[in-house]
Length: 253
Image 1 (cartoon, rainbow, N blue to C red):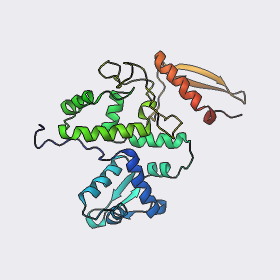
Image 2: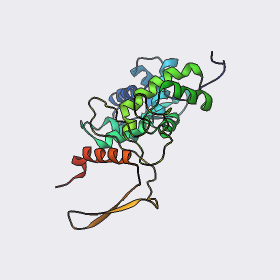
Image 3: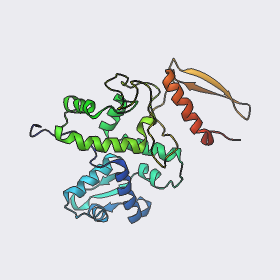
């Protein structure tokens, strides 16, 4: 039985798709990212101004980086962030830019980013994650099950593990391998209706000393040098498939 008084680290109480739906409701209510009084925002979601569940939803949408707030008490307002705007105003069926924004939102919660870094090739079985959450991240045991349900739904929706980092990560052990997947190598979960692979976003991309410079002769006869990181054979195969799926977005005839 979990000890009383233990509070888990902050994390969204709802999954990313639900949070985006909440943000979309606010967009329809107040176009052009206008600030909205908190009580009005909650009303749009069917909650009263003092509803604990409503404020929990509000906090969750904020944790995904989809809204920010200003003011306090009765003067507090919320508004959609630029990240939410990029997601909600891109109607294209296939959009690498929107997928990149969705991925960024999925990894906004610190605990999500830590899990992606620890298991870059896919989340392992629940019991493996539970040990890490309780023993290393000070999670209350009672919070583990709902959190895992949320994070798995979020990672599937954003296709977090399709955008496997080409370097880094601590995955690879048999214990940490994704459930039903090989002990090493990227996994490619399928999400209906979303065909373009997600993009790994790094705040400060850098060229490393062991990167391989690849010269490309462009259509106008100029030469562009692309730096490719060293990778294992499994990641290389994944990289080739990702390039093939991006062919239409990359090529210019």
